[in-house]
Image (cartoon, rainbow, N blue to C red; front, side, top):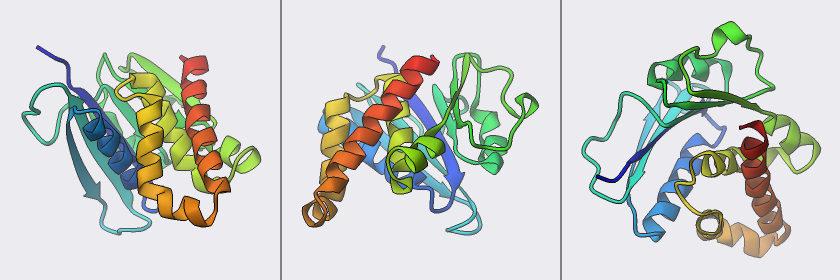
Length: 188
């Protein structure tokens, strides 16, 4: 039986959680994998906690939601509280180190808890708008669920029109995904 990789990603509305989930799902689909993406928005579309559930595997996926994720990503303080329920002993939990959280706020039962400085890197090295692509790179790097090349092709497909108008955006986004992969590789 093949393994289905279960991803839960949460952040505040406007952080790009749903966009990243869509791009990951698109890349998995392009690889010929089975994929299921379910968005879950808070009360407010922008400003509330938004959760994206993505499942990717080689065989049909049975249920749209899951109890425990293989990787759970929290991009805000409130999203940590909303996602802890999806963490189990085999879960890799990823959060941004810029969050105002203490060790008590983070899950105790995760296989690994990885703090990465995505906000800091996006602000100081790249551009604040590619924060979510750094996170996407972290997901790709931590799970290996899709190849980096296919992830970049999916980004190209999703953002190609913007890249045509501003070619530097392509390099910026591709650098961001590479940086995210590198961050979890070093943190792991």
